[in-house]
Length: 142
Image (cartoon, rainbow, N blue to C red):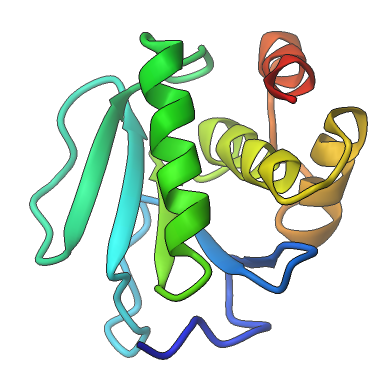
């Protein structure tokens, strides 16, 4: 499986070289963009139907995951699969929940928890991780 193209919209390079695409589901997917082989969708309700494998985490907008143990397991799986697959992490807007999950992936990849939000803001979206409790979640994820 070919990984994401580095430099493609929304693709974050982790320190290990793993590439993960973050995305907002309210924006249509570019029909010329490659599709993921695996995705983690962070939504308050069920995600839209897709043709690839995905995992849904119940994660309301501006909040934290309802089941933190399940969230950790899903993010560990996404991080592991990103070594050899095209992994996507997405929520409605692609900033708060997606940025929080990407920062947790950065922690799993070796970025110190206190620096993970800044890492994602520099490499993905400067507005990523929107709330104080999302920032605290990342710090405690490590």
